[in-house]
Image 1: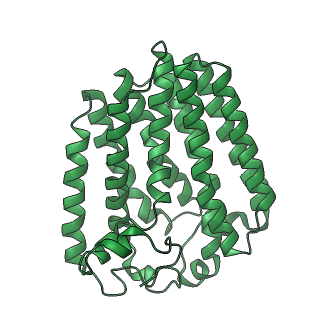
Image 2: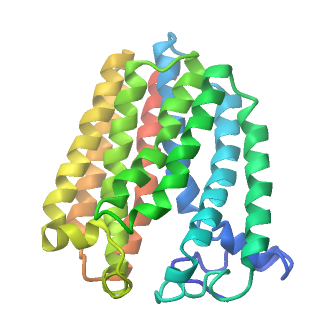
Length: 303
């Protein structure tokens, strides 16, 4: 079974036993862009923290723990989102084949799977220092609130940004033992980045969202979306550059930030909000935006 916006031929669909595939779909394993977007702000912070600590290689142990945590907790977040949205998903063309509305997984089975993923995430979290552990626990409030916001506000992407970029604060605290101003700037840069890429993503669902009665920035901004996206990307770049200045970053970091700005400009030049395929392609392209910033931060710290 192919679900909309999943990667065709993904290993989870080819190699996993048939009984496990619905759970892989529930955790969105066949859509890795989600965990990349969750992971990268944490990696930015770990790399930039290395600069703030005097330079050198970013902490490989922390990078590995954040990778594992991002994959697991993104999966847990998707399961919770699907439990909350099970009635809506069955009415939307892009989501009606998800495991719960299509009957592949029951709600009780989804809750059990969610608990299992959350326990794995807890095992990852307790490998970090005390400050990071408490910040990780605090993030649960944002995770629990986000899926409900599309019912009440045209700006649910703000709440997604607050949740998805918490790794910037968490990563900095894991590396430095406290939350400092560079982490706050990185966090804000990530929030505006999420506002940009998830507004692009939301334009795939405008008609269905209107029919079902849920809200999004795509509906709120409409034809003015390109101008708003330019502002979101500009604010993202500005705060990410500010984070580098606060952390004492050098020219390599700022070259990377400039390259990310060019990538954002490329996205805006290709945008067609009336073409779902283009919107999906540009949404996925934001992995490159995030990787450019991470590579710049890491290389700047090393050299």
